[in-house]
Image (cartoon, rainbow, N blue to C red; front, side):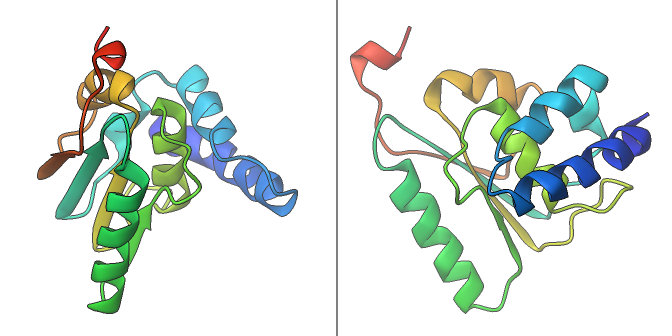
Length: 138
């Protein structure tokens, strides 16, 4: 079912990209079609999740630059779509139809309120927390 979901969603993602849209819509569609779609993906050997109330974009951007300058191919949700659907959209965009990643490193920026939901589906090698404000812990 994962293969079929990606077969449907990848062309939609390409069309949305051509129109300058689609940072989270493909992930939302994929989750509607297959609630277990995350299981279809084979993440790179180095997978890093970055969260925090502030600083996550700077940290993930810096990490992505370091890995790219070192010659690695990097998945990174650079557009800032850091909710569950956005993280899924990045995986869709950077994988083959069989779910295998086209990259060496995945750096996934995730909003602190969605970490628990994302970690039900993926298990990163590294988890960086920049900071958490009290109002975001609910």
